[in-house]
Length: 430
Ligand SMILES: NC(=O)c1ccc[n+]([C@@H]2O[C@H](COP(=O)([O-])OP(=O)(O)OC[C@H]3O[C@@H](n4cnc5c(N)ncnc54)[C@H](O)[C@@H]3O)[C@@H](O)[C@H]2O)c1
Ligand SMILES: N[C@H](CO)Cc1c[nH]c[nH+]1
Ligand SMILES: [Zn+2]
Image 1 (tube, protein in one colour):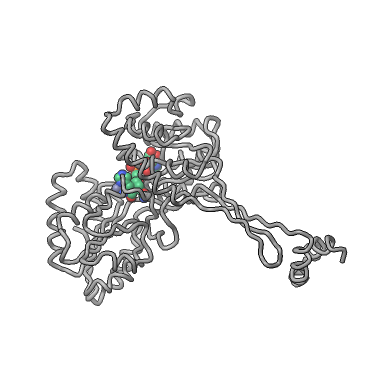
Image 2 (cartoon, rainbow, N blue to C red; image 1 turned 30 degrees about the vertical axis):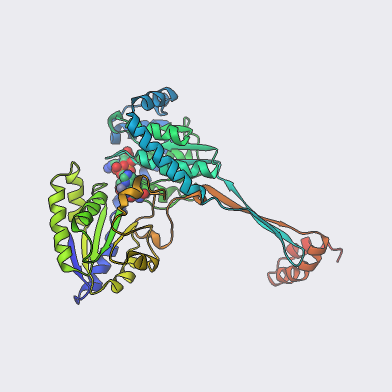
């Protein structure tokens, strides 16, 4: 059973802190394993990739078969049912339209001192996309990673995705083709992250790695940060549903399970001011679990990490939501917009009972790669800006330089940096 907390109980604050502190993805053991894997890939390159893929994914590869060939992608596209390809194209077009609006503007202006300045955005040259594939395959995550990369103008988009026992969902490859991915490798886990970061004989390194994955992937991204950029920590999925008595308990249960079925480490939480609704949702979860093919995963996630939080009133829920900083927040209350406007920390907000998070997973338009493990306090979902960087620009003519020089020279003196001062004054014949 999931834990139940009530903000009217004396022990609530302690129990809530325990909930916040529960480690679902970063264990020292996982981190130790990941450190060894990264070291091994750096030392042994493709041989290590092949050995780990055999061990963790049950797939025997050679250096030549690490990469998925264009012919295999052609065959995969042909193997996909047309209605699945059409759904994929619907999703791609909607994701592209949403992300096109995120494209940033360059700027160039001259101020009152006659100094011209501004900034210019440019795409990162080579980016690695991690597409999870351990217990489920994610064509939708291919689109969510690759479409904004292409909108940003990334030259080389490299995708890695594990294929346990060599079984590939053809729609994953079709999505890669549709979104314009340039290279696809059938590797996953920490070893794939290490290969993207450091390169091997067969895989040229990239400058940034993005995308979600399990605890091993999240730990590896943390470890390679600095060698390459990373987007965020997008680990095991989470949903927090805030609901009042007006909400439908069956809908809530379905949404809690939709997240729980991702991973035994996923987390689904219900927060409500209605104890009757809480009980009905718990009952509905048990009923719906019985009919789910992934009941084992979803049931374990719900039992180990699920939670039902009772609050005296919904006003009290707002600071608790901000402290939880969930990946996904669903609001099913009488006035969901009012509550949504007051939340600061959430990766994505789904407003009203007719906006299930699953619509956002596939075809809503916004990105489904979102910060987990409370990192929505300081980071955002994947977007076009993650694939770009900003260069600042500055230009002075003789008059502008003369206008700025005195303050610059004084600051150089204050910092004891003579050469700095001279590099200004030498241009002014002072
Ligand atoms: N936040 C998001 O945007 C988002 C989106 C989609 C999926 N997800 C999450 O992505 C995750 C997908 O997980 P997954 O496991 O299905 O696929 P995955 O691709 O993330 O991980 C599979 C890999 O994990 C490695 N691994 C497994 N057990 C290992 C072990 N004992 N030691 C070392 N390495 C090991 C293997 O290399 C394997 O290839 C889920 O947690 C899901 O919730 C998150
Ligand atoms: N809910 C996941 C993000 O946490 C994304 C996803 C992909 N497919 C289904 N769901
Ligand atoms: Zn999902």
